Length: 82
Image (tube, rainbow, N blue to C red; front, side, top):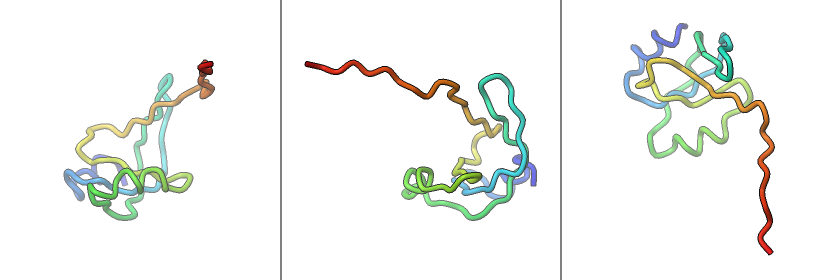
């Protein structure tokens, strides 16, 4: 189903979804189609977000667009303190 349909069916909630379709715009993935798996309580949203399996994600339906920001260079330089 389209992201907009999921927003209407599950208003103002965290939702665990399987991502079915998306397109890239620069450093962003714009998700257009999802398969809702279940709602997630506000209390458990952070935990569920980090435990989501590949191809799934927890996202809040208050967001008009489903956007995932892509990090092209995930290496972070850290200076050790001596």
